[in-house]
Length: 313
Image 1 (cartoon, rainbow, N blue to C red):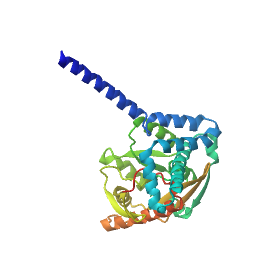
Image 2: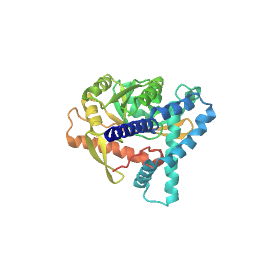
Image 3: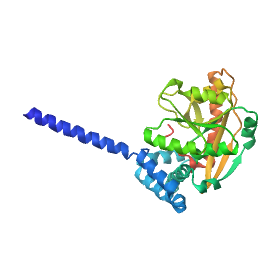
Image 4: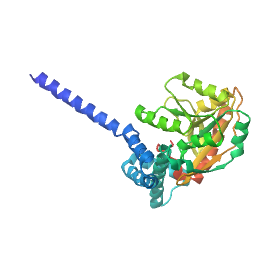
């Protein structure tokens, strides 16, 4: 009888734990629940909601997410050095608010207002030359500014076939929702990481003269990395991006974008980085360092638009 009672209590405990775990996954910051809520407001809410509500939500998440808030503060210190605590906290909140604004505008694809986006492109001849020659390129960017909307804007501005390369998100429903929004803006999305052959469509796309955009400021678990210097610290960039560009015989083009104000974006395109078809490890490291230096210059100029919510180290 005691065993039965114990078993019953254990079963009830397991059920409660399972329910709690399911609720925790549902309410996680990157869960589909929040993404759907953000999408509904950004896509169908009044323009005043799109323009003003992200500031509230960004500040609210900055208050709630202590671990991410501390990571942003440490990363800002790496960029700008230690400063007065009040200034540091203000910039932390500016980072969260900036992220919320960029996310909302990225989810607003399809609204009439998105046709009025103003963009300023610095270094445009670097990309114009590649597109006019029919040559593909791997555009390396970062979690900075409205990067999610950038690929669609480049697709329309340069009349190019653009593919966005991403690691699969944890929540498949959130991923599907965001992929649909991205594809409405004229880009294709390729998720990699689950299988070694995932990158084959990307290789074919690049060799056919297409553009592919991928982020270089995070390395997925189990992925090989190249050691670089970033703000005087050792950092890691994904080796696979540089090896793939070499295999496809296309240049690497650092492209970063910042949100200047509501529906106004500024692109910074750096000089192409060329690699031989069979690069040595040292050549890969040199190419990675050049990309890291371009990223460093951009972040130093716009530190609160670097949405790196994990510690650098």
